[in-house]
Image (tube, rainbow, N blue to C red; front, side, top):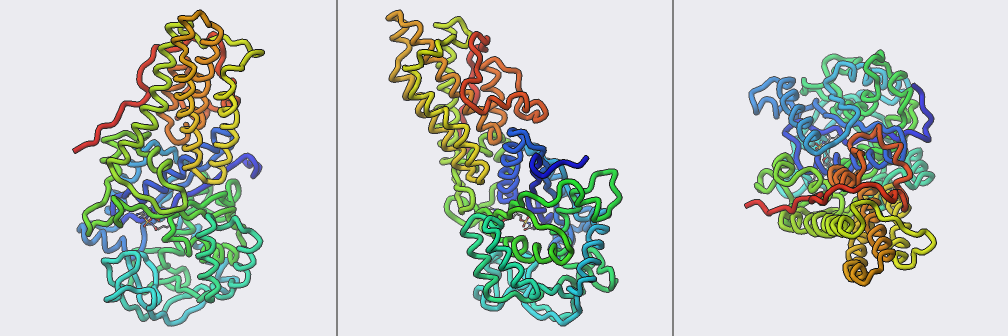
Length: 526
Ligand code: MSP
């Protein structure tokens, strides 16, 4: 089915290397992508979230050998680890592309042919320092002492001197510069854009797109003695993922419905590939460019770079098993400004999540529900729309919330979306303390009590709705307490709740459930 660009939203995570099981960095990008996808679905768009795995290349070949497995066996084992984590983290992905899928080879060949026909591929000698962990050549000046990679600081780079096929990137210098200027949103956030501008201004060099001594890869179609460079193959995986199951694996079929992507979400370490190499490859192949590439920051643990050699990695499966998906998703989305580096500390994680979800949001709902049962017969209080004087301070704040939060999600300021919603919960607590409905009830001010309780219940509902992309489980429980049947994990049912993005959806007289905690306090595990 063909759909207009306006009502669809297609986005990707990176295609993760399968050298090892997923780590918290891969989980971070994927959680953010899922939040964005859920937000777009909530606002009625048809969404396609693509994730998957980058399975070729020397790095994977070596990882398999180290486990005494064939590369394919190794990839299959790791692939199930990724799928398991995405299930645990409640990631609703639509496509899971693996670059070892034979259909992918067909798409890569179609693109290769187009690029070849443009005269953008030629054979030449490649010499240089190569980081296998990055799968990237490094300039001598980028290297640390002892020729270590600046990203994989415990790995030394390896010398390469071989005959390869090259992509004529230099030809795209002016075209790319023009693109960045005309479309300032193409690379986000601004800081990443500046990095790319500065890199490109140093002059773009052609790069080799084949390898002689790597068997685990897609053979170069014009030369069976070489395999394609893993990045040339992997970036095209995004396009392969767009094939419908019944489609013939042809480039034209892949790009017919969802292409071009609205957003490629990546970490800052793979920015050049996505913001320089990939657009040049696409232009060469005569394909439209994505709308945006967003490069997020890097995570540290307790202020330190994470790594196996440092022994301070975080196992995302363990984290979810201990604390639940909503808590993990919430912490990373709210505590880290999206686009900047951020830190994980377990104590801060427990404190933040308890303060925000258990106290500010959960307790507010809990005590308000109790009062509503006591003072208003367990139904949503009936209020006089002509007299909202008492509740106006809370209502006015909450009335702007829908717009504010939507704009934040739209601009990928995911932390701001969370913060704005929580600010209303904090104000709700203050409001109810100041208004003291328990006192007013004793004084016989029933209309006032109804107004206060309605305002708080409605605010909590709105917060739950707007945060449902981040904490779908908590939001669903809040909604159940408020007497709704909705499940925020069932996106097909959400369009009928579209009016819920604004103040006033809670209907007077709706029966409410008995209060029970929507979020169990976390205990720091020892
Ligand atoms: N296979 C390539 C991507 C190809 S896309 C066509 C790759 N894979 S990766 O598994 O190494 O990295 C995937 C993502 O994890 C990247 O976006 C990277 O930035 C992210 N992270 C890896 N470590 C990270 C942190 N410590 N913190 C945050 N994200 C980091 O690159």
